[in-house]
Length: 251
Image (cartoon, rainbow, N blue to C red; front, top):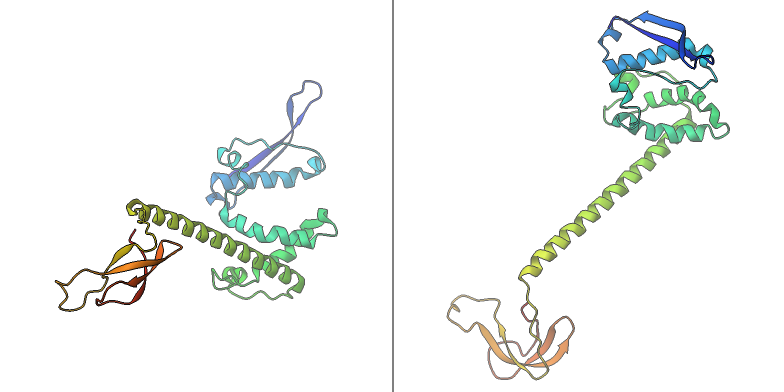
C-alpha cells in the first residue's frame, strides 16, 4: 500500500446523517509499505487522531473501519501475550507513580520506559536498548522507579511460583487417586482373627537349599488384636521361627 487516508465525519442535526468535514492522506514510507493490513489500519487511525485532535479533543467520537483484522481484535485486549506480560509490570508501577494524581499517569511513561529499556533481561542476556542500538544507554536511573519495578517483578515471580506449586499439588493428588483406584481393583478385605486363634505365617524369605521346605511357619496363637489389621502372636510349639511376632494378614 502506497498511502493511507482518513475522513472526519460529523452528524448533522438537520438530517441526522454523517457529512465529511475534513480529509487527511499521506504516502507511506518504504518501511511502512511492508506493514500488514492490521498494522497499516492502526497506523491510519493514529495518524488520523493526530490530525483531527483539534476537532475531537474533549468530544465523544467513534472510529469506523472496514478492516476485519482490526475490528475482531478490539474485544481481545490480551491477544498479544508478550504485551500482556509487559503490561503486568507496567500498569502496577504506573499506578504507584501516579498516586498523587492518577489522571497524569501518562507523564510517567517516558521515564518508566527508559528504565525498562535499560534493565537487564535474562531472556536476551542484555538490555533491550543495547540489543537495539549496540551500546549501553547513558542515563541516570531513577532509583525509585527501579525499586518499584524490582518489587513488581518479585511479586510476579512469587505469584507464578505459587501457581506452579498449586498445579504440582493438584497433579500429585490426581496421580495418587489414580494409583489408589488401580490398587483397590486387586485388593480384597483382610480376614479378621480373634484372640487365641491359631495361625500360620508365610515365609517371605527363602534361603539356599530351602526350595522344598515348608512355606509356612507355625502354629502361632493370637495374643492381642491391634489397629490396622495387625496382631501380636506367640509360638505354640517348638519349631524354627521367632518366639513372638507381629502378624499382618495379606490383603
